[in-house]
Length: 177
Image 1 (cartoon, one colour):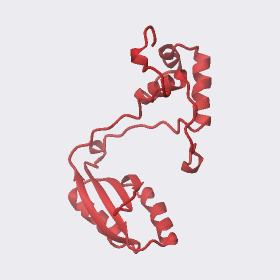
Image 2 (image 1 turned 90 degrees about the vertical axis):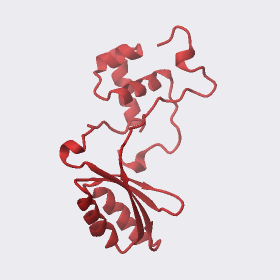
Image 3 (image 1 turned 60 degrees about the horizontal axis):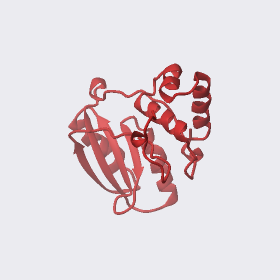
């Protein structure tokens, strides 16, 4: 789903939607039968509810997670980028180009002194230096960069999905889940 089609406001989610989302966050490869069992609904309902979450823009995709060292990309870095000028054409070119580069894992548009934060993965510190020189130092829109090596990465959760305001958390309700 393209970012422009993401819901701009929170979507109404009931307890079943939230449980489906949490199960898929935990394991996106879960079978529909097991998803239905874990959420206490019929398999046909689980399938319809999951499809509806996709159509409503709540679930935006499924992916495989790759071990970066296993594919020769053991050096990760976070690169702060400050643009030289804030010209719309240059900004658009930069924001279209960077995420397409195979080394870029994520790109964040940020506030403050840093305009963009890039998370990249390469094979070596020499490759990192060359990447910065080839892709940032020579880019006419880039005024300043600061590179920080990543020594360790601890993935956060895509959930748990917050309860509805005013509800008692599921783990505190008697006889649920």
